[in-house]
Image (cartoon, rainbow, N blue to C red; front, top):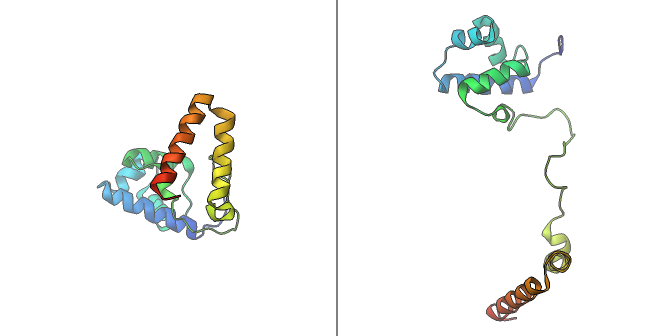
Length: 135
């Protein structure tokens, strides 16, 4: 947003930009030209004095072959909000229900989704495992 003050996150992203620019053997002038700005403006991004736009970060990402998320991994946070991911819901630790809880979940899944023949195969495999571990 225009006029919004920069913070340590902007400094962090800027450091990552400068690091990748140097690794790619690109000059500030070359990168700034691709952005349509001065090298002085790019330097402000790299120092975190100014906030880089998503569009410019995308251009830089493609120039260096570094994925966009690289610039944000490990970035300091200013809040306690934990954004949910696109994966599964958070799962409880195995110790919460122990292995018996896990066995119940797997058993329910097998019962609901496997054919009779496949269920017998799984039961045979479990019996074989039980004999191997001395159950």
